Length: 118
Image (cartoon, rainbow, N blue to C red; front, side):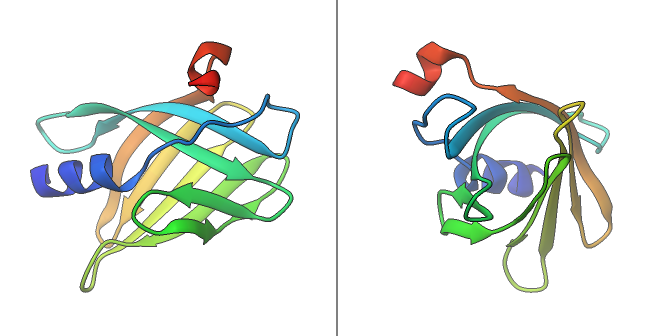
């Protein structure tokens, strides 16, 4: 699980974006692993609803299913490792699942204006 934690930190990043009403939106998400260590980390996810894509550092933009209520996308975590991300846009709840169930739960919010401007 620790290797996956490091992989997630390296894989997901945010990018500067416009305010939430514009094309790209940056979310800051605090996640906690479901393993006994309960590792907590902060990740950033940028999404573009119009083009139905999410920015992921190692892969650039990846396809996503983005509606008014949910953001969902998949990542390839390596050989035989499938990672699925779901963000509920109403509550901000993030669930990251893998081959064997839920890996992380978290809470996302729109990044503050100072963070977006950096």
